[in-house]
Structures are given as C-alpha cells and as structure tokens.
Image (cartoon, rainbow, N blue to C red; front, side):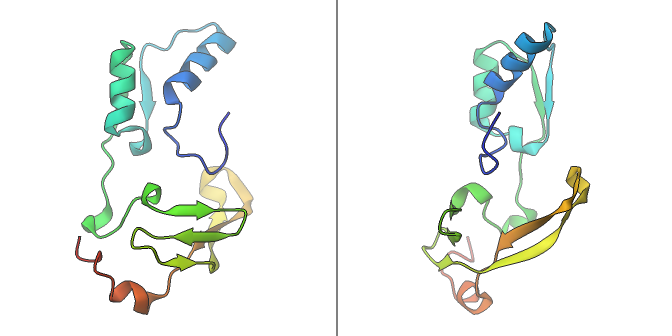
Length: 124
C-alpha cells in the first residue's frame, strides 16, 4: 500500500512481489500506464529480471512540468512550482468517477496565470 500522494511508480517492484506473495501467483509480466514507464522503474525491473510493459511518459506539447517537479505540502495545503512560486489556491477539477470513486471530488492547485505567463521557465 502507498500513501495517496505518493508517485504511482514508487516501490512498484515491491508491490508486485507483495501481490505475488499474497496470491501465490507469479507475474510473468507487469503492465502499467506511463507512470511506470520511467527509466528508474524500468531499470529496477530489468535488474530483477522482470518484464515491465509501460508507455514512456511524455508531457503534452512539451509545455508542462510533471507532478514530480512540484513540492506539494498537504499539511499546509500549498504547492511550490519548479520556479519557486507558491500557491495555496485549490480548485475542484472534476469527480473521481473515471477512477472508480464517483463521490470523491478531485482537486488541484492553481497558480496565478499572470505569474506563469512571465516565468523564465515557461519556454523550457
């Protein structure tokens, strides 16, 4: 089990091994979405002699930073971007229906567009 704010790929191999121990079934291959397609996760599986099938993660249009680049503090309900800007503004983005949790609203941190528009990292 992982914390709700943990990256999906965290301890992926250990979770597979735990599932195998719990079920008594050995996984011949592990299939995951692009959250599991990063180099470190692939390396971990390869070193263990395990087959991992996952898309390589990409950013949309190359204009967004991945979630891992932000410092999210759920205790203070704040988020700091890669450029060091901090926000506490939280907005509702939709329901969790597509994730199997229809009664749970999904929330996201929102940054001031004027600050983001003038960011020197925007062109990266």
